[in-house]
Length: 544
Image 1 (cartoon, rainbow, N blue to C red):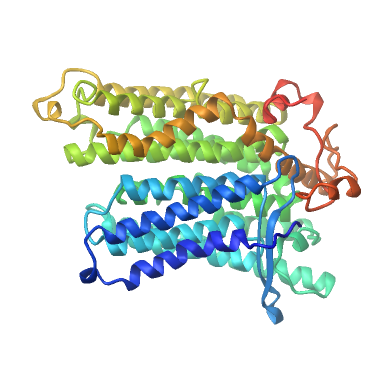
Image 2 (image 1 turned 135 degrees about the horizontal axis):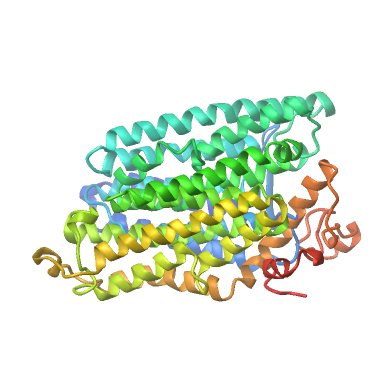
């Protein structure tokens, strides 16, 4: 594991937490009304700069953890402040760093901005900590910490049924996390019984042996928490209410960032700790993923509320991510990781736009909106780009992720891939229908007064549109960093489950890996498998 003299990841986690404290201790009466918002944006921009520096220092081509920080926290309990980043977590960190300042600028609080900004910064710190933690107890603390600011954001700044939505969200996710805590303790104690060492660090626990029953039960305990957080069907019932009743900022961060904690947890912990159980239960998870894709798409067709439509659309997209993850091959898993980022960018854009529509018309009911394209052509044009990306139109980021997911799944589990393709078709139906109802036709008297996006709003959404297009046209730099970490994970799963490692994924010798400053282990995969056809070339942007 590669360490660095300067603790970049520790600073990444602590800066927004310190910013939250600063916002909280500056009294309202002592400063101008805009001060807390400006301070929050400044702190989140600093966090973005740190994340950008981490991305710049990240070495492409190797799958291990880089820029690690490891300090003993509670020696007798075996708990470490252990942080590290690889290709799987790198772009989720960048996604989080990009979305928080844009959310603060594009979805401001209707009241009490001081508390609002403070909770947002605390949520950013918890999300960053979750994505870079390598100690299971540390991860659990950050994972649980996200519940507190999210609960107060929904309950304090949400809409009519915000109290109900906030309690439902908290109870569901907290109950799932109880299983996670039990699972973490069980894994550590089983490891201690085998080695005599009590530790919660992931690299050490990966070598723990579990019986078939132990592995399945622990996999289910971990997945219960992750499936609720994501959410994966049928653990999704809290999400439509939470997404619809949360303020715009809450909706954006719940679905674009916090939901990825669940899918990331499955990739990072389930596949690494329980590879045999992951392969054994893959058919079950693939079935739930396909049901989620089709169910989410069909229920979205029946929605007349734009926020609920996006909530069920997100359920379908999470299903695609789970589908690629449990294909358990390089293409599917790379597509799943990439789709986490792609979905975050697209759904954040759509929720911001729906929030701006609400500010102008005080509604997001489809039946109350008509012909907005005429008075607000820029709004309509940006919504079109985000909608097409969500559908998966080639040239936009949604296509690349879905293509890799479906290709990888088709290679390993053909009929699940065929069934999931139906969800892509239905997605085009409900999104195009919603667009036609809201933006086409003759506008009513109220709709003709709808203000188009101002320059400040265009600048806020511009980075998201640029990233949506850039990742659709040229995903190679991202895939070059994701694929080595994915390949390393696939090798680990295949070896433990006695599955033949595909040609080209064999690990390099230790000496060769250690020659590169970014290498963190002996398992540093070489090229993607040459025998998997064109899709393998896509996962590395066509690198020979």
